[in-house]
Amino acid sequence: MTKADIVEKVADGTGLTKLETEAIVEGFLNTVIQALMEGNGIEIRGFGSYKVKKKKGRYARNPRTGEQVFVEEHYVPVFKFSKDFKIAVDSGMKVNNKTEE
Image 1 (cartoon, rainbow, N blue to C red):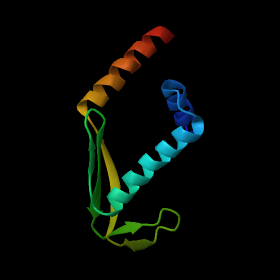
Image 2 (cartoon, rainbow, N blue to C red; image 1 turned 45 degrees about the vertical axis):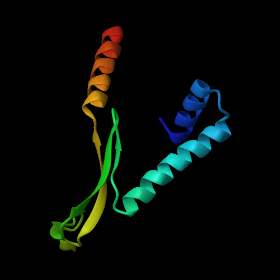
Image 3 (tube, one colour; image 1 turned 45 degrees about the horizontal axis):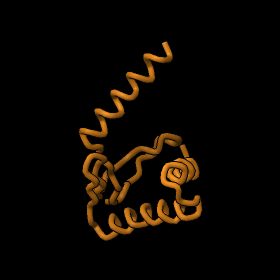
Image 4 (cartoon, helix red, strand yellow; image 1 turned 90 degrees about the horizontal axis):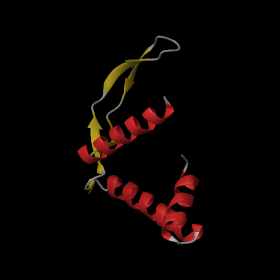
């Protein structure tokens, strides 16, 4: 599913135009990115939480050449799904897989 698919699905479900929905989706994504850039976490109850983790510098191996290279300390965004989210996906997949059998 692409961002355009999400926009279409939300627009169909809310009655908003695709243009309005696209602005909302873009605004949400930009807000998440901006908050993480500022070092803030985001928690959406029943969905999950976004935060930034610091990765220590380390030595790694270039898989193409085998050469050892140093990867500097850096920050990566992470997302942790909520328990409710995991349960919903699991039960939904079980229902969908039963209909396919």
